Figure 1 (cartoon, rainbow, N blue to C red):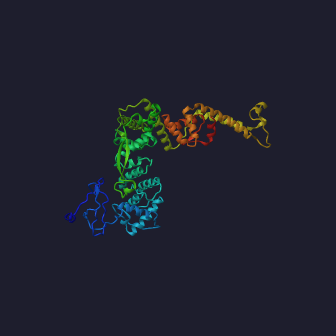
Figure 2 (cartoon, rainbow, N blue to C red):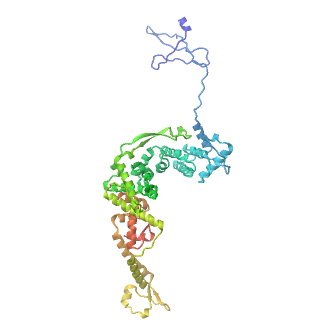
Figure 3 (cartoon, helix red, strand yellow):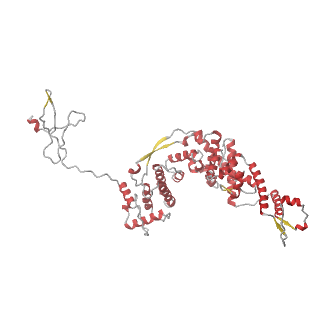
Length: 518
């Protein structure tokens, strides 16, 4: 045993072993700790411990480690300290930095930055360098400078809009960063502008926006997003390159929304439900790439369920045909020679699109030209006749020279008290109002009888407080559009009442009481 005491002993720690109570030697102790060992000898416990030497692997003292910090974390900490800092005035100093932070700026550059940032927060977007813009964007995506995520989203979009023409590089970064911002804060916002401005982004954003538009918000579909669904490369069309560009971008999304509503009404399922694209695929999206971003805030990445809606062959085929059909209809309306061939759609769809485009395009063309006066000879004659009757009812001239039957006077205007030294006798106000009410009542009845049940529902919807939204839902549920319903109702009103009854999406005030009665 004496020789063993001079040799080093190694202790192997096995958590489930019978070896217990092995002491840890003090750091500054010159003597090694001796373990308390136990052994069995003929059923008796030996109380004399057997000494052993524990090998000390290092002699330096261990210190409590400092919490790990990153450059991005330090940036966010500093940003929070400076969130309220402003300057009343400052001189613009150029600033160029690949990943700009506060430490990269000189004193004069810092004064300009805080002056410029305060101006931006007030909605005044002064000319400045790109590095200043990126620094402010880094603040916003790291949660500095806003309390409500919707306000942060708004500020990012306004900065992008204000400076993207001056700095094309913003389109390469801000679209993706704003999309990431909406994901981490669970914002229900359209991605159509991001997709349109940032064509280099992965197609996931276009798929997400297509799914949202075709299921919950068809009125928000955009031309740029829908091009991902079409096999027809409209950018090569001479009509699109030339005079048809604006009209096609305006009306193609409306036509798709119209057909989506039509299919929903006819079949009880929207386009996505009729042509299911398959299950969602979980996609990992890395957040705020190439930005100064502290991953401790929202993590390194997010998982997004993406439905490959653009990969549905029957749906792609329909959208492609709608693109081509809309172009043909607009070519005809705009007097453009030549038509696209081989377009086959349901006859009802063709008729619906034709009527819609004709109505909307001609209405817009008329608005651009200004109002025109069209005289209808029959209506003119009727108005002249009506005016004579009203004149007769309102004034009675030369009573002494005219031979009126008393009974006729009593039946029509009642007793009239003569006014001395007056050549004109005015009817009582009550009589005038009653005569007008009879006339309006008769026209109101004709107007009511001329309306279809759907048009009546549309007018009832517009009488509610949220009339425009109610009308939008009613039109979608019945396979049409609110603009078509309004135009149809106004046409009937012009024929019978001689006036428009709806202006924009509001009922003309003077007709509200009449509509409530009918």
